[in-house]
Amino acid sequence: MNVKFLASIIPKISLIKTAYYSIKFKGVIVVGKGAKLNIHRKGQIIFQSSKSSLYLGVHFSASPGAVLDIEKNGKLIIGKSVGLHRGVKTVVSENAILTIGDKSFVNENSRLQCKNLISIGESTSIGWNCTISDSDQHGIYIDNILVNKCLPISIGDNVWICANTAITKGATINDNCIIGINSLVQNKEYQSNYIYAGNPARKIKTFDHWGRL
Ligand SMILES: CC(C)(COP(=O)(O)OP(=O)(O)OC[C@H]1O[C@@H](n2cnc3c(N)ncnc32)[C@H](O)[C@@H]1OP(=O)(O)O)[C@@H](O)C(=O)NCCC(=O)NCCS
Image (cartoon, rainbow, N blue to C red; front, side, top):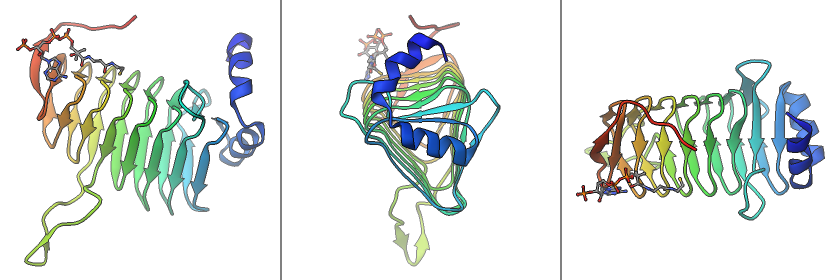
């Protein structure tokens, strides 16, 4: 963390919560003003390495605040410089595991709802107002049989999920994918090096490599 960056974030953070949670979970957890953490005494934030860090509700310009709920035996596994920006709500349910890799972030007002297993790779960006949920939140029983089971979600490295996108149970988005604005991503495999978009999301373009400025 360089001095200029530190000076820019200090006015935005709660020093008491930052110190408290960093000491409690033995890693860098920078907590923005107004952020709420509800972590069960058996819930965990686990750091992948000594360089890992979590910025909760610090960036960018939405109203201050973010919510992080971790229930009993839930685990949030964090890489280096992970951002859950302002207005993001993250829920890790009982016994669930949510992993977010190095340099990935979730932008303002998105929601991560992890009932069982969600994995987000490295250098992946989730845009504004996205929803990522590995369950439907309400079970549908037909003839007493649950028909909409929770299914894991996997999002690879260097993926860009554009704004207002919904990612539902069972989706596998491979490395280097882009998902266009307002898309619906479902229980399918989305191949590397494609742009998908629409409701439901379909291939719209392919490329050898993509990068961003
Ligand atoms: C995904 C995206 C980056 C692709 O841009 P692009 O490569 O310039 O794509 P194009 O505009 O050439 O579109 C190619 C085709 O896909 C369609 N398409 C593109 N995005 C679409 C979307 N979100 N939903 C449905 N169709 C879409 C276009 O209509 C076009 O169809 P056509 O060939 O029949 O005319 C862009 O569409 C997008 O979603 N931008 C929003 C980014 C954003 O959310 N930024 C906020 C911060 S996260």
